[in-house]
Length: 224
Image (cartoon, rainbow, N blue to C red):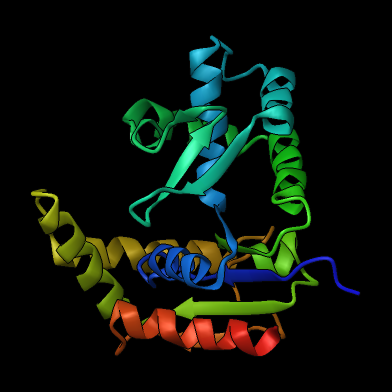
C-alpha cells in the first residue's frame, strides 16, 4: 500500500509553476514545497547565525537540520516558516538571494537538501515545485508534470509581474535572459531542465492561471 501521493511539477521560469502548485496543494489537500526556497532558507539561517559562505560543513548541517516548511494561512496563502517564524519576506531579501546562489553550488549542501526534499512531509501527500523534482529528487513520483509555456508568453508574464510591483521591465531584455537561461538549464551536465520520460507536459501558453490549476487538479484526482 502506498504511503503517500507524490506530485513532481517541474518547468522553466514563467510557466506558472508556483501559482499552479500552490493552487493545487490548497484544493487537493496536499503539502506544498517550493524547492527553490530551501536554498534561500539555508542562506537566511547561515546569515543569521554568522556562518561564513565557505564553511561547507556548517552549511550542510543547516541544510540537514533546519525546521523549514510551508504552511497555509487563514487567507489561503502559502507562507514559508523557519521554526516558528514566518520568513516569507525575509527569503526575498537581496543578501539572502546572493548567499543562496553561493551555497547552491556546494555539493554537500545539495546532497543534504536532496534528502530534505525526499523526507519533506513525512508520509503526507505532497506536491513539489521545482526544476528537477521528477528526474532527480523523485524519479519514482506518482505523478510527474512538466509545466511549460512559450518563451514569448513567459516573458510577457514576467513583465506584467514587474509592472504590478511598480518595477521597470524591458520585454526584449527579459525575453533574451529567459532564452539564455533555458539554454543553460537544458544543457547543463547535472540535472538538466528536461521533462522526465514519463512526465505529462502541460502547456499553459493559452491558459489562465485558474485553467492551469484546474488541469493539474484533474490529473492529481485521477491518480487518487
